[in-house]
Amino acid sequence: MPVPRKKEQVVIYPTEDEVALQLATHVTYFSDKTIAEKGSFSVVLSGGTLIHSLRKLTESPLKETVEWSKWLIFWVDERVVPLTDPQSNYALALKDFLSKVPIPKHNIYPIHYTPLSEVVAKDYEVRLRKLVAEKVLPLSSTGFPQFDLILLGVGPDGHVASSFPQPPQRYDKVDWVTFINDAQSHRQRESPSLSGDQLRQIHRRGTDKGAGGSLYYSGA
Ligand SMILES: O=C(O)[C@H](O)[C@@H](O)[C@H](O)[C@H](O)COP(=O)(O)O
Image (cartoon, rainbow, N blue to C red; front, side, top):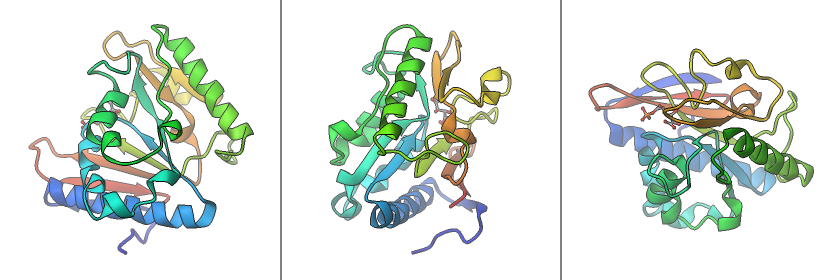
């Protein structure tokens, strides 16, 4: 199974199909390994083209062989909109990924929508704290919940999840979940997944011409 040898590595692939294939290969590797070690696999999703690039996981043979019942799904970055809104990252993930694989519904943790970003963020934090208290999620050495795999995209301006260049929330080391009052995107983000340690992250970066792309592996 080809896995990156270095702790951090950028690999450029010539086609988007190859990106999707490699992404599926690595995600499956980590899923098998993590489930064998601890019995579950917590995956944090963002939005964007990443979700489409997960499509190989929804096809045979992976669709049948991955231990989907052991997966837990969270969001690192969500727009504070109803879960049926086309802007919702949950809706995107449901349509193109989650509806195609048998992850138990109770293992999927979308936001609880209300129009107030601070209420949504606080609710998500309370739910994460409960999962940590119940030992469903471990706590990292930095005091944040520790996920097994974070899947991120990188925006054209370099933003990752809701970590944009300007908002001060990206320096927040206290809240587990915080929010950005951006009139356009109404983003909510989880801070731990971006500041925690010992995390495996895969960032996917497409090219402006739509061909190929790269995967950045960190802590993998
Ligand atoms: O809600 C979102 O928009 C995403 O979470 C966002 O952070 C995305 O990952 C990047 O913008 C990259 O997007 P692309 O993969 O579409 O380039």
